[in-house]
Image (cartoon, one colour):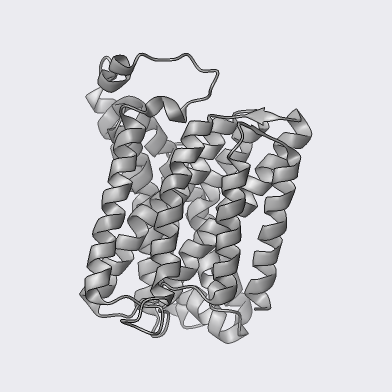
Length: 367
C-alpha cells in the first residue's frame, strides 16, 4: 500500500501529460469534464492519504517538534498548492482563498465534529477528552478567524473585504507568530494538554527533552522520499483539476463558493476520516487534535501564504466574508466554545453542530 498510492498518482500524472491537452480541449462535452473531475478528485484524495501516512510515520521517527511540523506542513502544502492553482488559473477568483478557509471551518467544526460527536454519543453515550488541549486550540482559532475572515469587512482602508499591503504584511506576521507560539507550546512544555486524559503522565523535563533513542537514517530517507513522491503528483495534477473545476462552475452556473468547498474536502478528507475512526474507537482526544489542528494550521499558515502570493503576483484577494457567512461563523465559534467547555460530550452536541452544517450547505446554494 505504501508504494501503490504514489504509483497511482504518478500513473495519473503520466496519462495527463500525454493525453491531457486533448482531454482539456474536450471539456465542452459535459460527460468528459465530469469523468475527468471525478478521476482527478479521487486520485488526489487517494494520494493525500499517502501523504498523511508518510507524514505520521516521519512524526513518530523524528519526535517533537519536527514530527508535528512535518505533518502540519505536508497538509498545508497541499491546500496552498490547490488554492494557488485555481487562483492563478482563473481570471476572476479573488474569493477562492476565503471560500476555502471558510469551508474548512464549517466542514471541520460543524460537519466532522458534529457527525463524530453524534456517532460517539450513540455508540459510547459519553466521551471524555483533554479539555486543556481543546481550549488551547480555540484560544488560537478564534482570534485568527476574526482577523482573517471578519476584520477585513470592517476596515476603512478598503471597501471590498480586501487588505492593504501594509495590513497584509502585518497580519501575516502576526498570524505566523501566534501560530508559532502555539506550536512551540504544543510540542514542548505543554505537550501533555494534547494527550488523552487517561494517558500515562510524563514529567515536564522528560517531555521537554524527549527524543527517539535512535533514528534509522536509511528508513528516514526512504519515508521522506515517499512523502515527496506522494506530494508531487498532487502539485502537478492541481493545475488540471483547477481548469476543470473553474470550467465546471462557469458552465453549470454553480456558486463560486463551491470551488472552495471542493478544495476543502480534498485537503481534509484523509484527516476527517481518521478523526471519525478515532471517535468510533473512543479516542476523542486524537480526533479533536486532528480536527482543531487542521483548522489552526489552515488559519496560521494558509492565510500568510495566500497573502504572499497576492502581494507577489498583484492578484486581488478578498478575505472578508459576506454578512450571512459572518453570522454562521460567529455562531460556530460560540457553539464550539460551549461544546468544548466541558470534558464530556454527548450526541446532543453532535446534533447541534450538524444542524449548523446543514444551514451552511443550504446557504451555499440559496444565499
